[in-house]
Image 1 (cartoon, rainbow over the protein chains, first blue to last red):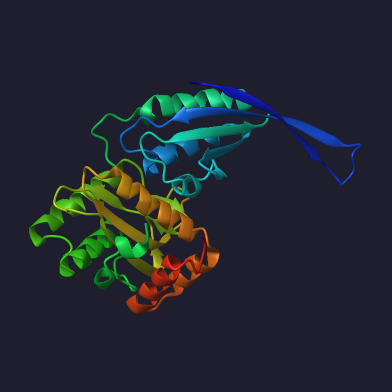
Image 2: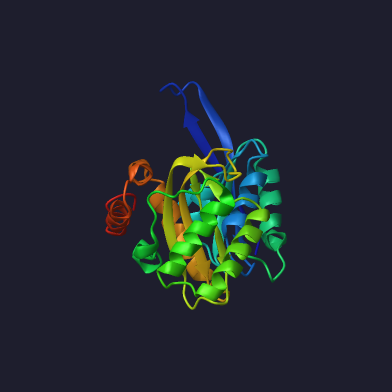
Length: 117
Length: 158
């Protein structure tokens, strides 16, 4: 189920081709298994964890891609239980970010089944 | 989901008096009670449940916005209301800023999807700076209602 894809992203700086920076983008697909889905508190935990990494973090659901370090952005996904999300991390610690964030999702945001919304 | 699907227009408050978290929540639940959306005998229990949820972490999500909420078995469908505070209220927001815009939501325990769709709508619309600013400047509940209608008609962010 866990499938990583690595994409090479080239960013051209200063409009020239001589000076460009190359970054790795890594993507991991996760499924929301907690009953309440990506509600406010779950989104907050995700952001709190995401901001500890230097990498840019984005989350994709269907065709919508949002900033994984913004609660309001994550809430815009309206991701219910069973939703498939792709987490995309770009930067030096992308792998660690994906490991930590996918674990948070897999552990159902540490909620029990009687959680508040 | 549109605002019209869950915001009780008669319970909208443009000029909330309360200056504490508990006061705001109480005033908004009272407004829903007066509008007949919440049973009188359940209102205290709803206020307590919302305050208990706040203890788990503030629903002040930044940009001067808070979304106090709870599940409650006394409601059959998602109900909510909007309030605006001119001065702003200390809500222990995640970004430390005072809150001026409040969206209070009460949902049936078995409908997590509706709650998420309401949050989706609120966060999507509030992304639009103009909508956010107009709401904060609204002087009457009619102004707010009109802004919500315009948002429902995709006048702002889509």
